[in-house]
Amino acid sequence: QGLKPIVSTESPALIFGTTSKLASDLPATDSFLGKNTVPDLQKLFQKADGLPVHLKRGVPDKLLYRTTMALTIGGTIYCLVALYMASQPRNQ
Image 1 (cartoon, rainbow, N blue to C red):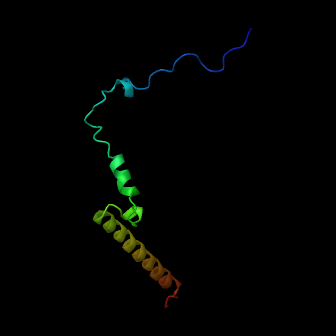
Image 2 (cartoon, helix red, strand yellow; image 1 turned 90 degrees about the vertical axis):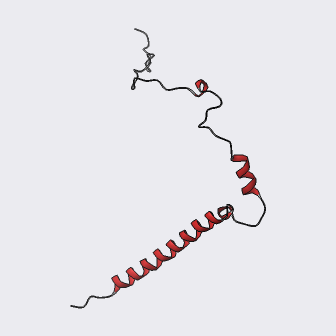
Image 3 (cartoon, rainbow, N blue to C red; image 1 turned 60 degrees about the horizontal axis):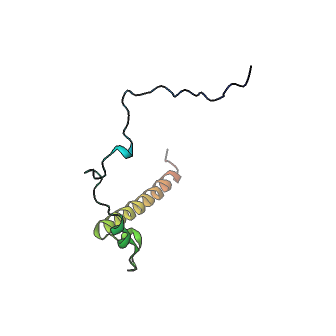
């Protein structure tokens, strides 16, 4: 009788009709790859200027930070007011 293999030795059928390209098939200089900006960003973020990382890119980061803080504080105040209103008995 012998032992039968547990895993099938046949390759599974294709699910989609088209095959995908391998990374090795792509040309090295495609236009969608663009310029590598990682070294520039590493220099920016590793600079010892005393700023926290989330504020290193200037005005856009400051606007996002302040908007997030305003929404957080506003949401906290809203939740506290809602809890206060819910804790008061209703007049009949």
